[in-house]
Length: 471
Ligand code: C2O
Ligand code: CU
Image (cartoon, rainbow, N blue to C red):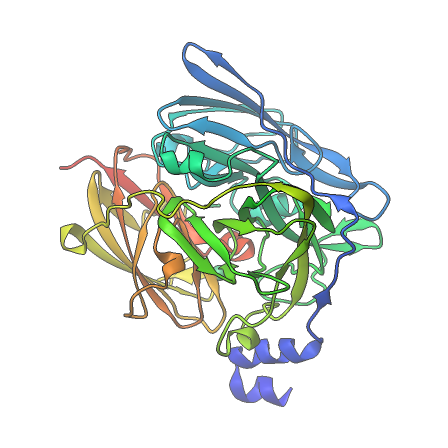
């Protein structure tokens, strides 16, 4: 109590930190990792057509009985959509939920009118068609609801899925690419159970939203994955609502980071850990030895004093056990991946600054009727985004992939060397990013940028920008 009185906000975190010992959750690895099925599609008039139905269902998430969940085309999560660069894609979405929803294509470059933000609600019983041409490098993207004020609840109940974009880069063929075999989605979510029922009770009283004490990967509790080749590619996605992970193997082995949110890196980067805040993705390639078991964990120790400052960041979890077969198909990691031309800050038409603090951006909460930025189509902009807070946020912008120019004035670390659409914002740090706002102008429909901690987003930590034709 004294701490709260004398130190204000920072102390609230500290008091929370002292309130319970950090979790260190071990898993029994009794369930084969569920791999989301690839979504069926039909090709009509040269367009690849998918159908998604958002609906309630019942799932056993590890407690031996069914609990009510929501999913796309199933009871929990959704199928993996997959399309190649250059393809025309149509997704027909039907809403069989008891409340309005939207579907947002996180990381996708597409017109604002089909971006699936809060301006395009799908009413109960209604449907919605999104159509666009995929035009960006191969990447691990995802889709989830974005209805405004209900995003945390809807994602928590199970509405999320992966969207894999393919292209012709030779590196894609050189990397493991057999879906569900040596190229595997790993969607990580923390959840709270009240007895055997999924619950949103804020057990840990955290200001960043629900922090679960149980982990699900693709909806699987305590999962293992049988591996039959020397290299396995994991498409890691933090599909949680608030929790930040720091992935590392129990034996601290090195693995190769090959891709970030928007595509492959120029070359693999060897590391023993990768941190993902809410919404971020990482493609990693792990090498295994015959017969071994390798345990992927999320560990404490985010560095410096961050652990103490991160709500829940000090918790540790078993994530996934890799079980290598006695004999493994040989595989080698390519030395180079894809060329990534750097955007030049000297070419920027605009520089903007956004400070994330409280539940506001530049002191303002989300307003559906206010545009916070007007961007001219086909121009490059530099954005300075700062976390003015003593707790972390997760910066996300729609439509574009950006490059990180600087972190607190210094060169970005190698894991931020590729295309990004979501960025961990450490307390009190500033990030300089650069993006080109190509192709799509629409003065009437804004895109969003926001904190991807979903409770923060729901509480108004979101802004809007429109892209307009050159005057
Ligand atoms: Cu993944 Cu605006 O969201
Ligand atoms: Cu936030």
